[in-house]
Image (cartoon, rainbow, N blue to C red; front, side, top):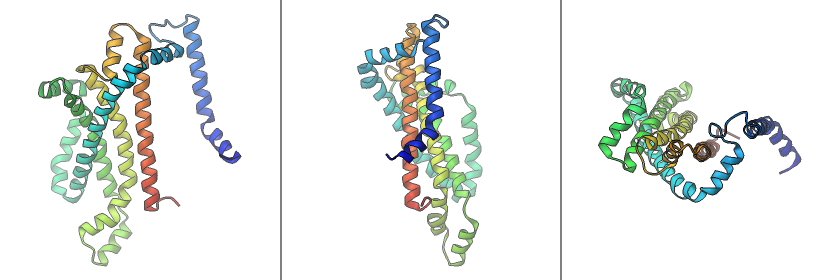
Length: 258
């Protein structure tokens, strides 16, 4: 990395890094001096010690279980959400019939639906996957549908004058132009997946970071609970960055960036 790149990185991420360091320092000081009780808000050092003490259990068992639920729910939401969004774009009666149900599905609290999924699927992996799927499905459908609708009118009319059919227009114009909107939905969806998995594990599970944090909260082990919350946050950030990287690779291949 040359000097110019270092200066650019400092200018871009320096304020954020400084703010994080200040917050962590103030947080640690407030707990160590007794201004904030440790059982309410443990110090960052205590959270790090809890991570180190329980790393085999957290990383080897609970993180893997949560990641499995997240990835299964995310893949299902991407497959069915993108197909439904494309179907609603291609067939207007399908849009008029299903779009209201999509809106209604987002007005029902997940807390109310999780016991229903447990009743249907039991205390298995699939009850959590169902919660994740319902959480992540809507952003994929909407981003796919809205992206396909925002087609370039000039390109669209040009292909039609050249004799292109509906499917050719879809493949040549609408899908490439929908990629930015589609990936925006994926970034939201993958973060929602972590939230959905946590809710599912809180309400009915025997493993996973959400289950671990609930058990630690019941035992008033706040440092261990915050360690699980930290890993959940790190998991969401990591998955978000992976989707962002895939988006940049795809857009470069498509010629959006020079």
